[in-house]
Image (cartoon, rainbow, N blue to C red; front, top):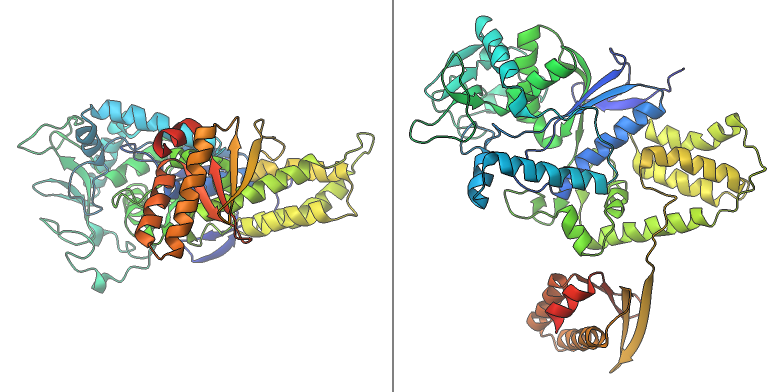
Length: 499
């Protein structure tokens, strides 16, 4: 089968390149979750982009072997090889074993990617299953003179790898101790741990025997060991978040290429941050939103997937519930338009004609996964009156193999709406099922009170009511016509909190 030209932005070169893989099937490794807490939707934005990449590769005619690891040990709270292991921190936080924490949050992560229609990779290697491979890799680096020992572990000597700064375009003179990492007994600020010794004054739940003593692997060595074991010494694509570039992926390249003498990965792709008002979404700051939180707000997770397509994966994307709600509205409109297509089954759509219709969409996808342009191309086809319904439906079938939005699905439970006008305030209540009179009265009372508080410039009271609505899972929007809309997803929860 002839492959379609696909252009991808390669972080390593800093430019878009024609994709020309070394391997068949294409070898694709993606950095997976550290399963000590819930994944937030900023993390999941990266997995959505990687899912689109995999789907696009297959649409372009490539076979793909896709691997995403599970980090269940060794990821410290600081990139500086200091602080607690995140898994141990999670266990202490919840009073459970590290193994139980890993099992629980791995299962929750799987639920999240399923809700977002992210396809399963070919393999989910867990770090704790590859300790022997990690030890062997550290031994190999030691034999080749790339390591040294300190009081707390075995470190990679970046001075022995002259190309260390090339990938992330680091300026060695600017990497002063204390800025990027803490020095400790390290020879250089950029040196990093390959194997950490267990603390002398406490026992870890996860630790192993090694040639250097009891300890656990460094975070960076894990991905290299798993990729080299399950793929090859020189893979085609390595993906992750933009925050991995300067440290994690730079370290992966150094240790992998030092060990094998070969280029570790030909193409490096990175997804940008999901941004809140106060910066990137991050668990460390407590400012993160989960898939479950979206559901509590009455938002279909696929609306968030659609929201991610509103910006290029290499561009920061500003998050707001209003923005995701707008994407939900757009997705519903798209589905309604598709459901309304009239298709005569007797019409045979010529293959070349279908390819012609698909071309603008595929051109956008093959231009470094330009999903905003791809979505625009979908609407252009649907609005084109010269294209018959049968051809449009076939086009949507092909497009949705990449979009993954379940465009032919129809929501089974329909929403109802009640419109009231009280004291000059127009109120729209959108709900599913039967709305109780108690909840209806509570909603109306609080909307009117909020409106009056704002008019009287009593913003503290207005904010209190807004926060109460948020806690109850009721989405409140002020519409352009002056009306206030309340969207209720979980009526029991809303009634309990608003009574």
